[in-house]
Length: 227
Image (cartoon, rainbow, N blue to C red; front, side):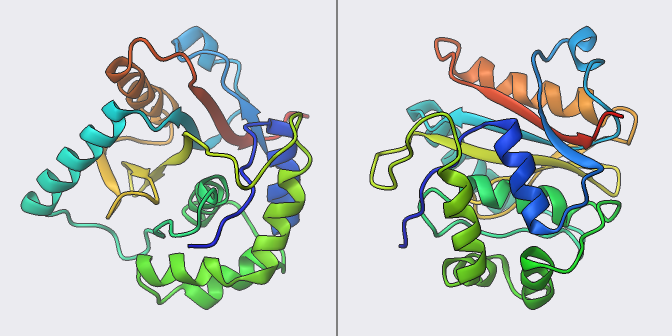
C-alpha cells in the first residue's frame, strides 16, 4: 500500500484543491459550524455534498464490520452511474471523499484537467480497480501531496492518522454514504434537493452519537460560492 501525506480539514486548502482538479470557482468547500437547523441555514446553497471527518475508533470499526455483514446478506440495488471507489492508498481518504463528492454531481462542471482525465479513464472500472488506479495516478498523487503541505500544521506521511474522511451525496433522491474503507456504498434512505442537507446532518449526528465521548468530528460542505 502506498502512503500519501494526510490532508487537513481546512476549507481554504480543500477549496484550492478542488479548483486544481478543474472544478469551477463557483463551487467551494466550507465549514459546517453546527448540525442544528438554524446553523445549517448559514451554509451557501445549493449544497452538493457533506464531508465528515471522524476518528477511526473501535466503535466505528465494530459498526463498520457489522454493517458490511448485514448489507452483504441483504444486498443493495445501486444506480449504475453512482461513482464509488475503494481506498487502498494510505491517507488518501480526503482525496477520495472529494472525488466522490464531485463525480456524483453532474451539476458540478469539470474543466479539462487531472480529475476529468481520471474519471474518464476509470468510468468502466470496478470500485476496486478505481482504488488501484488512484495508487498509480501520478498527477493526482502530486496534486494531493502539494496541497497536503499547505495546511496549518506540518504534515508527516509516516505519522499514524486516526481520522477518516467520507462523503454523503444525493443520487437519484437517495442519500448515499461513500466511504472508501467500506466494501460498498451505504444507502441512508430517501432525500431530495431541499432536504439533503438536513438528512445528511442527521446521519452525521448518528456517527457522533455512537462515540459520545469523542469530540474530534469535523463537518464540511461542498456548496455554491457566496457572491
